Length: 117
Image 1 (cartoon, rainbow, N blue to C red):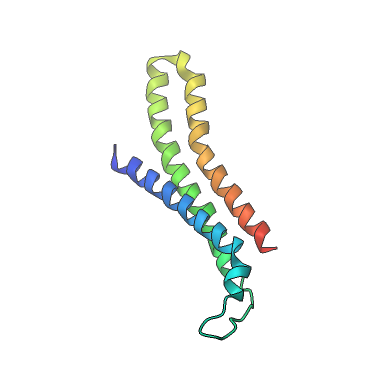
Image 2: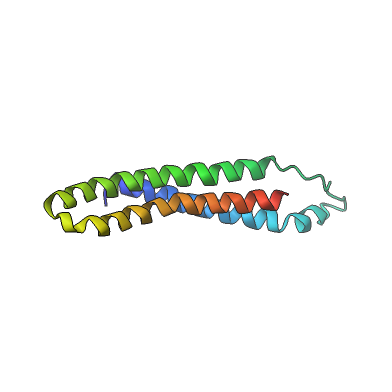
């Protein structure tokens, strides 16, 4: 595996884990806010700024990973199409799958923003 492929995989995995943690955190926000700490009631003021940061990170990092993936797949596709033009349809499908990474990040950020209200 090339270093760029490893980086794209690591960024995609990081984005997925980050989105999962943020989704879990906002899903349990009321339970976390109502839990007493050392006999004191925790303030229930809700600050949505972390949610906006999480949505931005989900979109930005997944788009970055998709760009790296499309660059790798696109370069290989051009080389393959040069040798065998009949592979054009298959290569377009592979490039579309690589672009799907950005779409998943966008969907996660929309879910996070909907959760914020």
